[in-house]
Image (cartoon, rainbow, N blue to C red; front, side, top):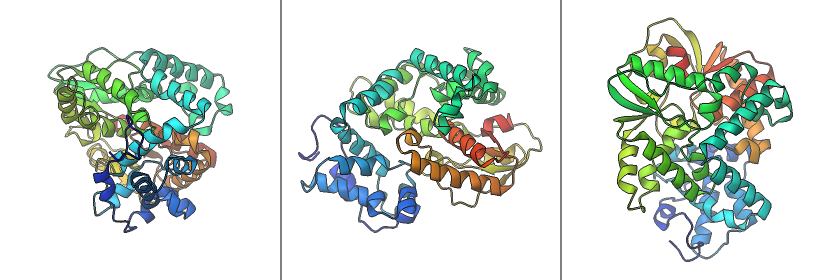
Amino acid sequence: MSDNWQRGLLAPSSDDLATCVACGLCLPHCPTFRLTGRETASPRGRISAMRAVEEGNGTVDDSFRTMMDECLACRACEAACPSGVPFGRMIEGARAQAEPGRPVAQRTTRRLGLSWALSRPRVVRTLGLGATVASAAGVQRALPSALGALMPPGRVRDALRPLPAASGTGEPAALLSGCVMDVAYRPVHRATIRLLTSNGYAVSPTRPGGCCGALAAHYGQPEAAKRMARARIAEVGDAEVVVVNAAGCSGHMKTYGELLADDPEWAPAARRVSARVQDLLEMDLDVPARHLGPVAVHDACHHLHAQGIEPRPLLRAGGAEPVELGDGGHCCGAAGLYGLLQPDQARQLRRAKSEAIADAGAPVVAVANPGCAMQIEAGLAEIGASVRVAHPAELVS
């Protein structure tokens, strides 16, 4: 690591920075560059700012922080890059470097949420159930629109009803309960368990409310992400497969080996768990044959760009007719906390995605990531489109 980065913090590596040749092929694929047309809102511009700090020609100042904060970390640039630039890893390092210089109140709030609350499953459950009650009481109207879609009243009963500790017989499979998925999308877990048990797995969910650490890693809190990774690794034990039904979570858990590479106590287990993580949509599963009809397909960024996974094979196996959105797989603007931290750009992306879904003409859209589901539910409500949002597991189980 260059002496120009703050010591003791994660930072973009010299080797990673050297992979970018500034060709610009990523520019048309970057959501923030398409919205603004600014070089500073492009992957090339952000890497240029990182390289300037690396070489001692720039500093981690407010301008640097703004450039990194505006990024969705959707990794569309990675999928488009012929040089294999690992931008996801680089933006996480740049954001870790940006954290110490934030205003005290902002830094404290982010640490409380990303480091303290998310690493405590009971707190996650309490906050989630609080959102449930607020939603049922109609308080969600006062919240940012994506948060207001978190827990519509119909989900209250599901959030309070626990998952079975174990289901089925056969090959052991651990199912990540997660944080948002566990509280807001319990029916998806139940559908996942039905699919897995019918395919011969013995399914054991991890601790309710236990976050995988993705949000902390993406938003400059790598030490918190490591704590959560250790907790999840301990929970999955010797399961032959670790099943994850949320795109962002599966993408992150597959990097546990890299995240904990410098931890001699946990590195072997981290590598072992990373190798056993499977997103539900990449598993070879038998599903009931039925006629589901047209289903619009939203590709979550951490499926499409980070893992090369898409839901169409599973949907077709279940009798669906996938309908493309015609928007080139653009990001919906959810991106973890992006709707809270960059509301204007998130709103523009949400509207564009929702209009593309409505224009597709299908009565339901398949969405396999909780952040995307919340964002899209809010966007469809904003434009008055009556399209149901459902996880592929719910449709085919």
